[in-house]
Image 1 (cartoon, rainbow, N blue to C red):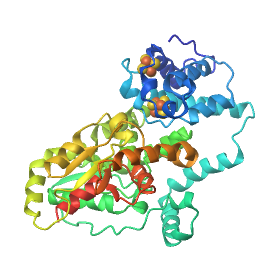
Image 2 (image 1 turned 120 degrees about the horizontal axis):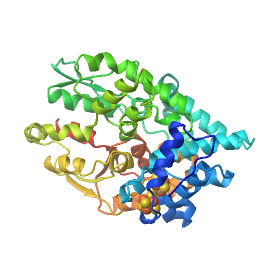
Image 3 (image 1 turned 120 degrees about the vertical axis):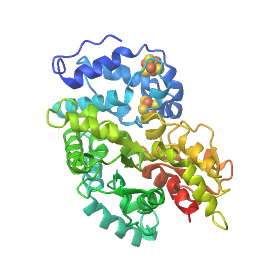
Image 4 (image 1 turned 90 degrees about the horizontal axis):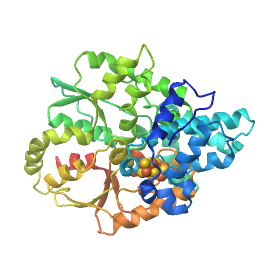
Length: 418
Ligand code: SF4
Ligand code: SF4
């Protein structure tokens, strides 16, 4: 689609990028069929093609309304449409830019979000990205969990013991992103990862100054705050990168997809562009790294098999959108677990979002819970003993709707190693 940028966007990096993305869309509508919000709402404007059309109008300077914002707000940013699109339209980048332009233009017209919504977005940004605040709040919530209203209880997982963090030194070292909410919500995920890598002869190093990957701020319209989070992480990781860290390991696919975009998002920052590019290149999801160790893992799990849980278990795997669509990584987790003797099933419609989608489950609860319940019905159809996934948001969201244990797949591998 040909787009003529409005004056306020002409020659700006975001404007030119958005124009080039829209230019690739041939309006075929293939993406609409795989869009979860279109499937739920049946409105063209709640599907990718309709949203792209809305954003094109905004880029051209046509009037922006609250309805425009609503249709963009309802998008999960699951990027299922990117996987479907035959023309390579980078919808995720477009909607990030489009949302910011729409918010700014409405603000400029004095059309503010309702106070409750503004507060929710502010609270998410300021609490989730600050572990020193979020951690104590989560512990308090866990203590009084039974007394919390259901909506809040759903966001507060049962407390889990992280187990022992290994302190062995190995010549092979990789960085591990601790993340912002995961250490408080599910501390066992990173500890299990460190234990598994320790058994494989790799030491995982956490740079304590690193924090939120930037996704929470960036995807809720605070682009400057998100970019600042990214620069802080680059500074925190850089000494270890220079010292030869082999990779930056991501245990949450939602963080992984963001860190892999640092290079692109900071490409115009003279000071950080090159470092950001190198950081993104070094960033790997767990499922990209562990297949290289699959022989060793198989030998270790066989050795530990006697009487241990995990082997032969029936599990249903939910691949997060940030892994299968955002990072375009498919099949690796299933192959690895199958190789270790786990009976892994993908469910019907496994390409669809579970409704968690970062902050979406808080900001759009109705659609989010409908998607969760549909996803759980599909996942549980095979009668799994556990559901495994690869992102803390999906894990917590799914667990809030089922008594079947939901965990990160690395926790299963950790258990199998004994
Ligand atoms: S990102 Fe997901 S919800 Fe948004 S338009 Fe694309 S498929 Fe639909
Ligand atoms: S599938 Fe791609 S080209 Fe076709 S309408 Fe959707 S975004 Fe546009």
